[in-house]
Length: 231
Length: 231
DNA sequence: CCATTTCCTAACGCCTTCTTAACGCCGGTC
DNA sequence: GACCGGCGTTAAGAAGGCGTTAGGAAATGG
Image (cartoon, rainbow over all chains, first blue to last red; front, side):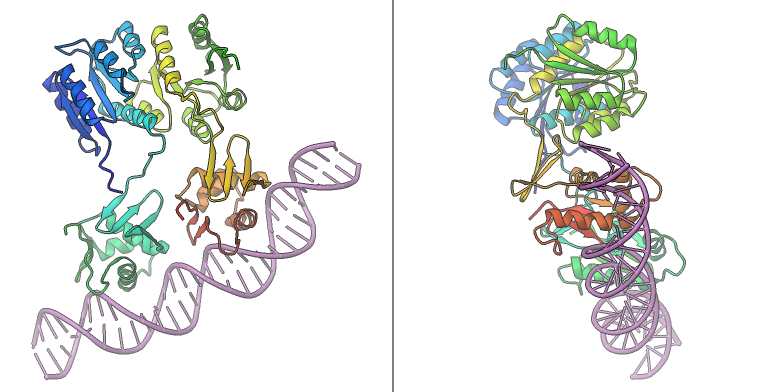
C-alpha cells in the first residue's frame, strides 16, 4: 500500500538542466537521485537500483555511450537518453547500445513524463494504479468509485458517494450547504438542508471511527461542512 | 520454428508514406504487412500477430487512439506511432493509451529502424501466449473469444461476451449503465437499462457459482455494474 | 427456405434507496 | 432558567430500480 513511488536517477552535468528535470519529477510522486558525472552515475545505479535512468550524453568525464555499455553489462534498467545532439547517427548509436528512448533538447515536461511512464510500464507491466485519495484510514479510488476503510470496502449509495466526493474535491475547504445541495442533488428544487443532516449522519456512521465525534467530517454550524485534512 | 525474421505491420493510409516505410523495411530482413485502414489493421494484427506495429494516427476510418485502445484489450504488441502532429498533447495521449514510442514526421530511416530494434528488444521472447484474463475459476482468452469456467468452455452470445469483456476491460472499476449500453450496444438509440438487467442475469447464470448471490458480477444500484477483483 | 440461435420486450415481486417526519440535544439569547 | 434555532438521530413510508421469467420477433447459418 505505501509504495514509495518509482526511483529515477538523473545523470546530468549542467546545473540548469538538472534543476529543470528536478522540477519535472517533483509533484509526480517520483523519488529521484542526481549524479553530475558518469562515474557517479554508475555508482548510484549500482547502489540504489533505480527504476529508470535519465542520461545526458554530454558528460565531462566519460562518453555517454561508454556509460551505456558498462551499465548494460549488468543492468536492464530502462534508460532514456537526453541530448542536445539531434543527429540521426547519435540517436541510432545510443539506441543500439541499449538505450530505450532518445529525447532531443529542448523537450516538454509532459512528454518526458509520458516517456518515463512508458519505460516504467515496460519494466513492470502490472503496475498501473489509479490515483487514490488517502486520508487517515480512508482510501478513495475515484476511478474505481471505491471507498476503503482500513482496507475493507465500504458501500456508499449514490447520494452518499456524491456528498463524500464533493467534500473530497474541496478537501480542507468549507463547503456551504447551498453548494453541497446544488452539486449533489443537481440543483433540483426541493433540496433541503435536512437532507444534508441525514446523509452526513449516514456517512459518519459508515466512515468515522466514532460517529458521534467526527474526526474528519466536520460541521460548520450555520454555514456548511468541511472535510478536515490535518491530524 | 525456423526464425524467418520479425514481422512488422504498417497501418498507414497515405500511399506515399507506405512506400517510404516499405523501402525502409526492405533490406533489413523484416517481413511486413500493410493495412490502409484501422479495421484492416486490427484484423491483420489478430490474424498474423506481428512483432511490431507501426501506426499512423491519421487514419480515414477510425481514430488512432481508439485503435490503440482496442488493440491493447488483447495484445501487448509494441506500437510505434507515426504522426504528422508534433503537439506534445498528441504524444502524451498516444503514449498513455499504450503506445511504446512516438515519431514525428519527417524522420529518418535509420532512426525508425533503431527504434524498431528497441521495440523488438523489449518484446519478451517467451511471452507469446494469448493474453488470458484469470479471475477465480474463470479463464478468459480475449484473443480466442473463449471463456472457461473450471476449465470447461462456456458459450456466450455476442452480446453476453461483449458485456462481459467490457466489464473485464474496466476490471475493478465501476462501469455506468450509460457506458455499458454505449460500448456494448454501440450507442444505437433505443438501448435501455432493461437490457443490462436481462443480460447481467444471463451472465450470472452462466458464470457465477450462485447466480442469486453474485461474487464477481456486482450491481451498484442506480449507477451501474462492476467486476469485483478482490476476494 | 427452414431450423436454430440470439435478441428484444413486457410483467411482476422484491429490495435498495430516497424522502419525510418526529424527537432529543446543545448552544446561545433574553 | 425558559425559549429558540440549528443539528444529529432514528424510523417508516414512498418511490424507483433490479432480478427474474417467458414468449415472440429478428437474425443467423446451413
